[in-house]
Image (cartoon, rainbow, N blue to C red; front, side, top):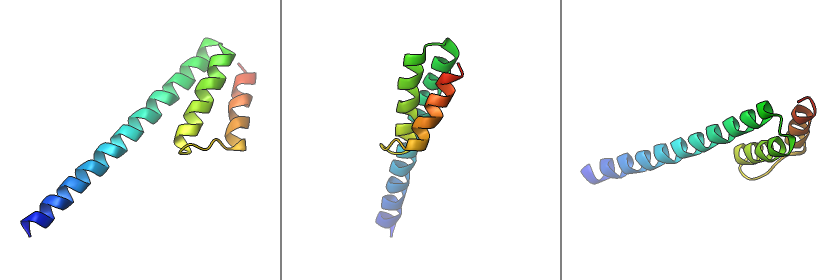
Length: 76
């Protein structure tokens, strides 16, 4: 029984760490995108926006994401 509890605790800790790392990475990419938009550097904003949306979509940038990035960049 104690072994089962230990396994559950270890698995829960691994899941929590994995979630925290993904969340932190998403926040860093979002901040980089926002900073690029504020800076006025359109090329950097496109790169940062695509990186952010690709990350939150787990590696697949959608057509809607691309349009959203281009729309924000065009209004800079």
